[in-house]
Every structure is written in structure tokens, then in C-alpha cells.
Length: 122
Image (cartoon, rainbow, N blue to C red; front, side, top):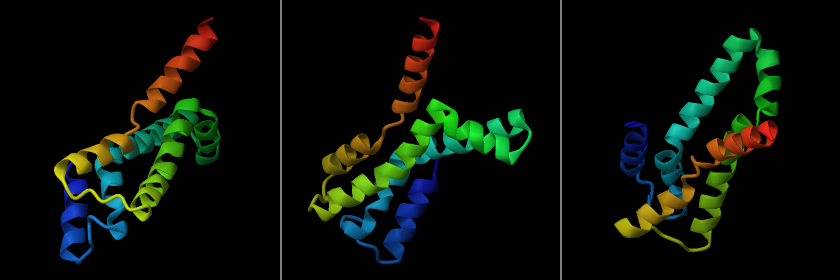
């Protein structure tokens, strides 16, 4: 839970302009630390269930919830970088909150799972 704070604090200590383009990754960790943790936990669960790394990797990329989570983890930083390059700067707490809210797509994987389950029960 404190990892994003440490990343933010460490970045500031290293002289990173956390409001500029070079600090685009900071809201990623604030918004997606739970998403990353859930993704790693899900992969470990699949490894225990499948018994081998190869089978768990195959299941991982065929599981709609895990795949949605993986896509979010990869695309959100790109979106944050593009937004910062386009000139957005979270110089107020409102802008910082807005940026984090938009980056927080943790609701997408459960929605995908719910839709998949609903479709298969129909």
C-alpha cells in the first residue's frame, strides 16, 4: 500500500519533475498498485492450479479476466505518457485526483469476468 508513496517520494528526491512528462509513471503506481498485485496473485494461483509455468502461462493468456488486467497494466502508462506529452500537468490536487481516477481501471477485469459468466450461463 505504501509502495506508490515511496516511488513518489524517491522520485522527488532524485529530482524528477513529478508534475511533468518525466513523472508520468507516478499516477500509474497510485492507481494500479492493487491491479498489479491482483495480477501477480492471479498468476501465482494459476501456477499452483496448473502445476507448471508453461501451463499457467497458457491459461493466463486465455483467461479473460487475467488478460484484461494485463492489457490495462500495459496500456495505462502509455495513456498517461501521451496525456503528459499533450500538455496535461497535475499541478493541483483536483487534477492529480482526476488523473488517478481516469488511470484506475480496476473495475474492468471484474466486469469482463461478470460478462463472461453471464454469457456462459445463458
